[in-house]
Image (cartoon, rainbow, N blue to C red):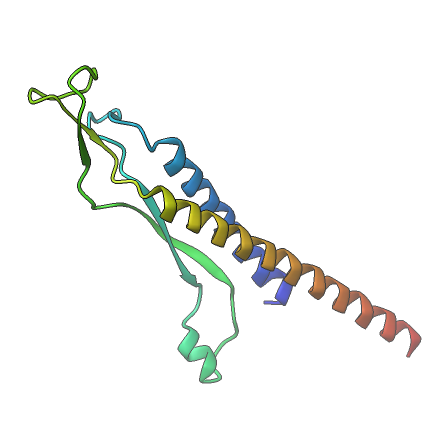
Length: 139
């Protein structure tokens, strides 16, 4: 697998991660989903497509990254006393998603930078391949 293909797999994974983060931010105040429970923030779990230790041992080649799973948070809902809210329970409490706005924004910025770094890596690989073709034509 060449450098551009590896970066492309990373772009795919990070784009999906950005979508999950955006979904979490959009649902930060969702007190009731179709199941009746508050929204549960999601996390994307990713990693290498191949066993990296085997690659370091000289077996195989790098194959990029992939999404392993998308998992819902197991944090308990945040309860807020709002007796006038339509989703309030008998005690007047509303259950909101266990959402960490600062943490989610940090993940957003980090993911955007990883995405950008892979775009740069793809561009550099393309330039290197173009230069190799140019050298090959001269020789």
